Length: 448
Image 1 (spheres, rainbow, N blue to C red):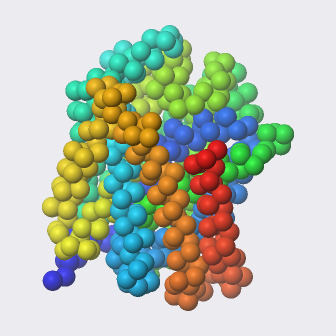
Image 2 (cartoon, helix red, strand yellow):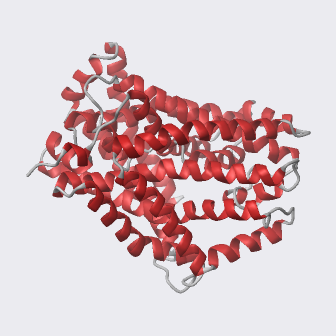
Image 3 (cartoon, rainbow, N blue to C red):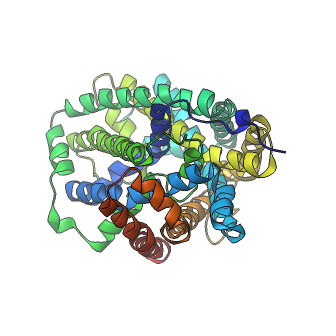
């Protein structure tokens, strides 16, 4: 029995694939994480190192995964088995486990963005009192009913898009959300740059301070560059498997990287000038989104409108990423067990919510401190295993697979699109440099 083309699906256009794949990269990481990591690492010098990492190791690893998927026309587990033999399919299982864990805690944060759109519209978070904002956030994430309802809502939105299919669901929604996302970002950048003193944030963001460069900063930039391009979780293998043979993979990959970088730069210009305008520490950390930013909006003209726009922007980014996280697990059931798309999506989404989403959502309230493993809450443990163990391992295996196991096949694909010197450079990064650098980054993530 074979899987119907309707269940597996394909991209309707090159631009649809680029926007969907870029949407996978332009998630909460680009808009939420990049500004505070850049702020903590010197601004301009971090930006330069980040760009260098994206357009070398990051692009090579992303293209490697895309070419694995397109060559096999299968998602990760089936693709590794088809191209590399039976033993390699375990690399695909790592990807499936990774996306399942990622969705478990990502849906919780996605639910927070929905809740904060509501709270911003109501005006309840429009205050400059950081302690009050911290209390509002803590009380919200600690309320079991709110946490579970908003997490379920976010998973439901994600599943409804994936059920509709690759072309009619994922591609169609990304063609709407990605342009909308950039329009909202430009609107917020304009307002941020209009603030008195905002120029100091721009200078900090674009002027390299070479005294801030360090091994740790370079590793932070490399880690953010590689993993913000959705490398290591099999996402690009699944998306690449829906490509037709006429699409130029290298060209598409460069466009995806460019869009992802553009989103990160705009996020920096959106947040850091406002941070400097109101004398906030640019290294404020993860709390920048749900505590610091509302306080900034409360001081801006039309701040409530800007707050609604900002959290809508976060929701759009979260959705374009979450569908790319859910899709590989759905594709796995379609390819491996011949389950149709609707049943596969409902099965993964329901199981994920009940097994992982509920514990992750309750990590900050009902189960806070009562349910821990290795000193971590379910939310933190899922994040740690997926981000610090499985994604680096998956990325390393993909690089080794492309650089060594299936290189003749990949080389043929590359020679159709690139100069031989570029192909040689590509293999050097995939076969040698990427595995070594990922191993170093992983060591620092786990033991530093």
